[in-house]
Image (spheres, one colour):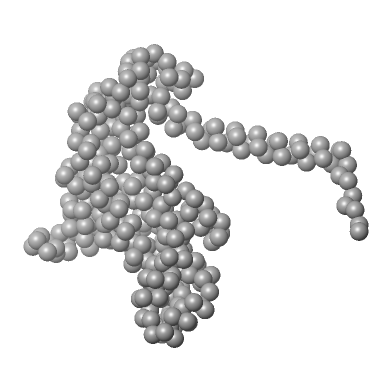
Amino acid sequence: MMQRPAIEPTKRWQKSSRTFGIYLLMTGIAIFTLFPIVFMLVTAIKADESQILREMSTFAAFLPTGELSLQNFRDVFERVPFAQYLINSVIIALSIVICGLFVNSLIAYALARMQFRGQKLLLAIVVALIIIPFQAVAVPLLLIVNQLPWFDGRMTWLDSYHVQIIPFIADAFSIFLFYQFFLNIPKDIEEAALVDGASRFRMYSQIIVPLSRPVFATVAILQFLTHWGDFLWPLMVVRDPAVRPLTVGMQAFFGQMPRQWGDIMAFATMVTLPVLIIFLLFQKWFVQSVASSGVKG
């Protein structure tokens, strides 16, 4: 039996130094990334506005010093209808995520498992749509939704929930993620179910969906993050505060005078917390799907 040659002390030291350097670099990047979040959280709990302005450009801005309280959070609720903005954002983001998971996964399942005329062309169109930025189609889309009728008799979709939901349910990138994942699922189980007389929708709902939880979680997180932070489209189509999401509400709050930085940071903290909670809840499946599908960014 051959013995593996011992690693020379010099090479072992070089390997340890390289590992230490990588960890040191990653730690530095992580700390740098956390700076804005720490600044936001610390500023949000500082009660003295003059102290915040005095420490704004110093390292003390990252330290919880001076008088600390939750008064800034209470001020936000008194100055703007924050609860209404929050409910609007939750309704819009969850509606897009739930409807999008169903629609996009069904489209991807058809592309990955069914044979029909124009299948390759449709897949090529989906891939091509991924590279088109939303800003390029925002104005034409605005002109279309401004003249569309709705069930209540109105001849426009502006100032409504559905104008912020329906145009974003079908998403090319989500379809492509589902398509990639479905291709890696063996067809043997479906073929056995097909012999037993199962329909395509039954195979999708009872076989494919339970096996695809990681990609469902990944798409849900990406879609939630995207539409929770949407700003351009809501700003273009919403004027009524009753259907205004958090991002547009924060822009209006930021423009109010006198500008209170403690209140602004408290507003930003309450906008950020739901995103962190959603990510922590689905983190395990998200990492698993990214590792299995090779998705980056």
